[in-house]
Image (cartoon, rainbow, N blue to C red; front, side, top):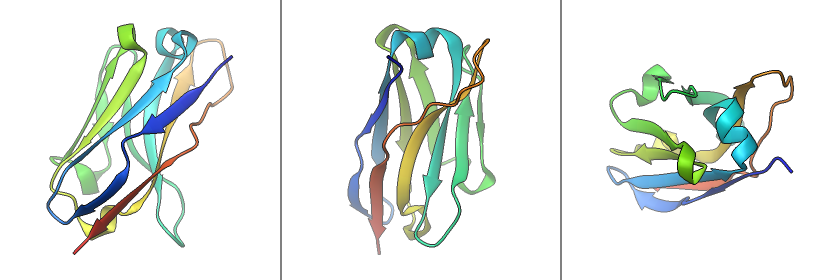
Length: 118
């Protein structure tokens, strides 16, 4: 069964840090590039970062230099380290597959809330 589950969300003051985790099935971590998305209230879902099978990362401009995405394929877990958080980072954060070899489906976690207060 293909599954993804995020954890690590919470509330933090502006300037603080949080680290999100995304645990998945071995199938995903041996087959798929991965991504972090977020959706703020009243806004469309936004791609925050993606990370390829070999660990190459890309980031949306608004988080460059503050967020770091990584993956541990042996632990079948992906991470998003978020530093210098801003109120505009408040959103529900989702992990998802970015692409999977020979599999057209996209798999999603259930989301975890991140709230940054001033």
